Image (cartoon, rainbow, N blue to C red; front, side, top):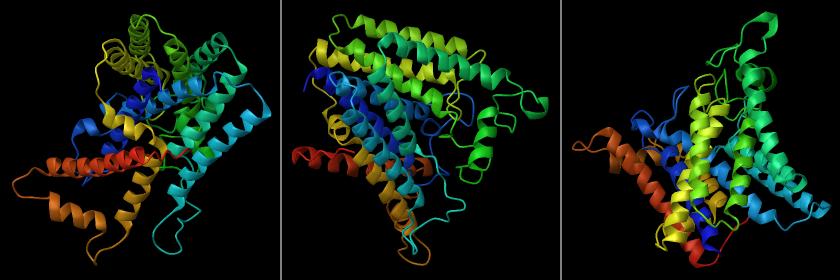
Length: 361
């Protein structure tokens, strides 16, 4: 495996480790602020994690399909992989460890992280197989500008002025509510909603274009320059279209892709140019990224629902018994619990890697 691909595996593994860290605190009421999403507008370190992963999916699409032809066989493989991702996501939403093992279908959440990855992967892979890089760049630009103009300037029903705030007259929230109804994460919005999936496709397309830049890269400075252009563009656009993960705003796409490119540039520079050896622990996770993420979500859900006794689930029993101590702040105990979960999955990834078990989804 070329080192530039190893660099991508390291960043992918880092994103999965970070996902597990922020998704499995000991107590959601006691979490350090950087490990929480922004309440609406704004950007925290946690808000970078999911777009980083979609960005890496785009890079992987470039290297996986650059020598593939746009044939029925290739399209079928893309469709199958996308369907598996969506199916796994729906399974996580529908499954409960208690009989009859299914959530109420009337309020079952349809969107989700894996569902979005599946949809974004499908659309991006098809576009990559059909279009050249200039067309992909044009499509991305059109979506980002069009999304901003639509959410910000197209009047709502009854001529109500649209807004970017968390409100009924936000087009992203409004359309999700009209189409998904009760099948959302929150009564008024879903962070993996329908219309916000469009700009998330651009995050992946930017990854494809960065993959092309990486392929045969002679001067790492090109990566740093690209990162700077994305970051500056995103923070300037923030003036008119606020950075917002919940609606995946166009400024959010540019800024997070800029940070993703910058992180990748640093890793690439240190590993490929300076020949430092580090981050192998993340590479183990990156080689089985979807498997590790799925297992962490599934097992975490089981630990919340399965009871040890009348008062405690497995999760609350372990947390309160081991990590809640009088000499330790609650935030620290909650964070240490999350770190212990991360350690478990890193060890699992290491075991799979050493046994040469790589589960493709």
